[in-house]
Image 1 (spheres, one colour):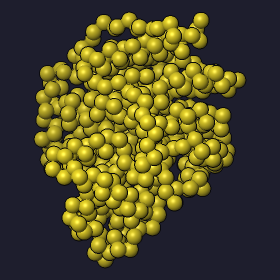
Image 2: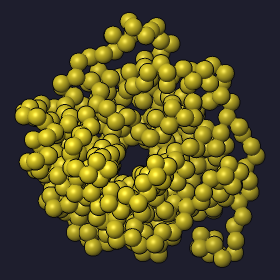
Image 3: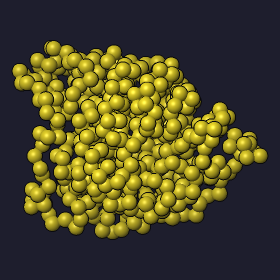
Length: 472
C-alpha cells in the first residue's frame, strides 16, 4: 500500500491566510510539543509573511521563534520558506545576505528549507539551493502555479527538469491563489512526474479560495503526489489550505496509509479552536465556488484589503473596474504569478490606471524595475506600449538579478553596529532602525520568551466525528 505524508501548515500558512499572520508565540507554543507526536512529515513554521509580521507588528523576534519551536518540537523536521533572492521581504538581497540567512536558519536547528521564485526564474533560487545543500539541509523548491496562456504543462515540466538537474531533494507545486482545478490536476501532476522521472518526491500545496483544493488533493494522490500540505480544521478552508482531518480520512478510504495520530488531530483542532475563541480569531469556513477568481487571480487577503481601502477613500464604486483592470495589467506584464510581491505591484498599477483614467500615466518604481528585468525573466512577452512607458528606452538587464547587487553587510556593521549576533545583523539588512526599535525593546523585556502557557483544553470529540468513527 502506498503511503501519503503530511506537512502541517497550521502555525505558518494557516494563520497567515485566516488571521492576517497574527498568531503569536503564546498561541502556538503550548501545543507545539504535542504536535511533535502526531506523525507529521514536517511542520512549516516561518515564511515571508510570518517573519515580516513578527518584526513589524507582533514585535516577536522571528529567529527566537525558530529556536523556541525547535526546543518544543525536537523530533519532527521543521521547515522554513524563503522567497528566493528576496528572502522574507519584497526586495532582492545581495548574495552574501542570502547565504548568511540560510546559514543562520540552519544554526537554529532547522533541517528543511523550501524556496521559490515568484516568477519561476530559477536563477533566483540557485544560490539558496547550493548553500542549503552544502549545509546538509533538505531542500525543496516550489514552482508557483498560475493560469495563463504561457503557463502550460510543458512550461512547468521544463522547470521541473531544471530543478532535478540542480540537485533538489523534493519538488513542490505551489498554488497560492487557489486556481488549480481537478481537471488540470489530472494532466499537470503526471507531467511533473514524467519530468522528474519519479526520482524525487512531489508535494502539493493549494489554497481553498475557489473551494476546489480538497478535490484536487484527492485527484493528485493516485497520480503520483507523495506529500500534501494541510492545516488543522479550525485554520483550514477559506483562504487557507485543506483540512488535515479531511484529506487523511479520504486518503485512507482510497487505500493509502498515513502516519497521523487521528485522536491527536482532534486534540489539535480542539486546542486551536479554543485559541481562536480566546483571542477573537475567525475559524476557517467552506467557501462557495467563485469563477471570477480564475480571471483576476488576486489573493484573498488583497481582495478584502483593497475593498477596505477603496471604501475609506470614498471610491468603493471603482472596485469592479480595478479588478477587471488587474487582469489586463497582468497580461501586459507577461502574466506574472499573482503572488507577493507581484500581486501588490499589479493591483497598485491597476488602481492607478482606473483612478487616473489613463493607463500607465503613473508607473511605480517597482513596476519599472520589473520591466527592466531586475526581478527576473517574465514568463511571457510584455506589451510594447507598456514597455515603452515603463523603460523610457532603457534596455532590460540579462544578468541574474542577485549578481547586480553590491555587498552591504560590512557597511551595515560599520554604520549601524555593533550587533549582538549575525541574526541581528540580518534584521538590520532587512529593516530600518525605526522598525527594529520596538522589536528590540520588546525582546529586552522578554516578551517573546515568556510565552503564556495555559493548560491545554481537553478536546471535545463528538461521537459523529469522522476521525473517531475510524477508530471504532
